[in-house]
Amino acid sequence: MYDIIIIGGGIAGLTAGMYAMRAGMKTLMFEKLFAGGQITTTYAIENYPGFVDPIDGPEFAMLLEKHARKFGLEILYEEVKNIEVEGEIKKVITDNKEYETRTIILAMGANPKTLGLDKEEKFRGRGVSYCATCDGTFYKDRVTAVVGGGDTALEDAFFLGQYASKVYLIHRRDEFRGSKILQDRVLGHEKVEVLWDTVVESITGEEEVEGITVRNLKEDRVYSLPLDGFFVAIGNRPNNSLVDGKLDMSPDGFILTDDTMETSVPGIFAVGDLRHKTVLQIVTAASDGAVGTLSAQRYIMENFEE
Ligand code: NAP
Image (tube, rainbow, N blue to C red; front, side, top):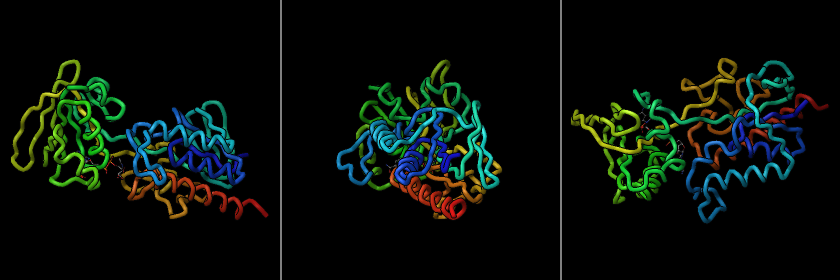
């Protein structure tokens, strides 16, 4: 019997794990791929308190995993297939085994949204990418485009600007959603051209991306852009399939919690990008992880200990 089972090994999950081990809770973490989650696709982190010099995402993830393991966190690299959330004792089920636990911390994060264009899936890895920091270096001296107007799209455009000969930044409105400091980096960048009020209508090419067709919404003008790389950065979709129908969620599928991270089911907590909240940053993911564990600890004291 575990005190806490954490599902997902991103920033929020690893922080929850580190706190749980320090608190002496019997804890197990499941991660289906590799620790770090979305942060492993981040190029430079320069807004985490205390890291004065930028640190790259994979290195940051490695340090966090090391930190959690230093206190003895056990991580199983296995996919969780089902969970049973009702009752005093919860169950976490994989293909191999059923695990019993007093609390569960959900930290499965989110994945990039797609535009839903024809050929978008077919050309994934052949010119279509959801991760500029992973694939950007393949586009040295080539023409690229980024779709989106949030922090991710702005960061991606800046990152690609170091390699590509040209970066079109395509946004559906006339104003970015992303932060001022990132806007300043791309507006006026010699290689970045912003296409305002513009949507992508199709991807062209036979075997790989050769271009896109875009529509300027204000002028109602459709035109083609020859391209080598097409980067989609339009936000995230929560990885909620494990808990679909079991917990209260927002209309777009993010798990609703109170400010202790507890979900609509007692003893089940949700942390990080999977949870409905307004600020998705590394520092808030870490904060969620800490709060989630301390709340799970309090729940165990109140419900299981005399
Ligand atoms: P986001 O903030 O949700 O922005 C998504 C962008 O894509 C918006 O500009 C949106 O347009 C656009 N968009 C959404 N659906 C679209 C569609 N179907 N077609 C065309 N455009 C579409 O997502 P994000 O940039 O990935 O950021 C997610 C969170 O992570 C945010 O909280 C962000 O602050 C955080 N983040 C922080 C950093 C950092 O601090 N360094 C870096 C990356 C991400 P509208 O604006 O018109 O809605």
